[in-house]
Length: 400
Ligand SMILES: Cc1cc2nc3c(=O)[nH]c(=O)nc-3n(C[C@H](O)[C@H](O)[C@H](O)COP(=O)(O)OP(=O)(O)OC[C@H]3O[C@@H](n4cnc5c(N)ncnc54)[C@H](O)[C@@H]3O)c2cc1C
Image (cartoon, rainbow, N blue to C red; front, side):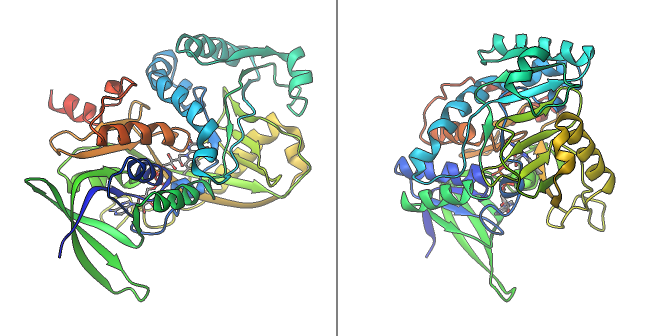
């Protein structure tokens, strides 16, 4: 007999777990499926930075690109509020600390970037101010003397990427959602009342079997697989895949209370609640490809030694004491951005009842994405203007 759901969520990363939790809390019959395990991919491998300032990748291409990226600021502000309450609502801790974040500058050009960026962000309502060298002496004595200024936003911080999505997944189950892991969405057929989905489950010995479920609505929370899952619904959802590097050091007494980014280099750096230092910021790893040259997201990307070295140099240049802390481990994860750096959030065109969110710092923005999606599932109009994030904006441009 075919099982019936109000919502099937495809993807058990942070976004999928949050959306399943919110929809189940709203009274929907929810099934979440993941082809692997909950939190196995980007949501469990990322830096856990809560970025509410624009990031280096958004300002490096110039002021116009930064202005476009800043159109996501309503989501940043919403997410900042949501992270502040999330552990309380979920009922378990997962390392959320909003103790502020700095974007640092080493020269006059970078200071100009900071000033432009702060003005832009303040225009959108973000609390951010520029600190000069004298202020930094007392505020962030761990920074290099070469840092001449920094933008500070008190909302920024971190959460533990290893524990956040699993905690939210447990809350979703407690709220009534069902979760099936090792279960891939393989196919979808439109019916009068929604969608018949073909799910392929993989057993521990590698044997596969299929089941069909019926659902009124589908949420695509598939991270780097979004484009591929979109095709199942006949949708064009362009995303750019990125394989990125992370490095963690051994534990040292706590000395970095802030999230640190750089206005002129790829860097994110923070000290975790375990007292390790987590270093990332967008250094690439090599995405693997299949026999046809298409990206193979299920194959582990390759670490690039030059990225490990470049990231370490950027970290030491900003926080010299990092040079004396042994690095323990480097790893990679795969994520996605949209061509204009704005996320994709909303209803999927020509696929009634199908909704999607992805793109950019979707760990930070996950709570806000999920709140918008849960509202759309409940038939409510979002209180954030989501038109700039329309998932069909690229398809519309291509067809125009
Ligand atoms: C190294 C690195 C560092 C990062 N640092 C940060 C950071 O500090 N701050 C920040 O905000 N963001 C960061 N990001 C980005 C962030 O991790 C991602 O944007 C976010 O985790 C995406 O979450 P998600 O739930 O949408 O996707 P994912 O966590 O990727 O989950 C998608 C899930 O969908 C499942 N899936 C895919 N296709 C199917 C299918 N057909 N059927 C069933 N299941 C399917 C996958 O198995 C996967 O588990 C970083 C990313 C990387 C890689």
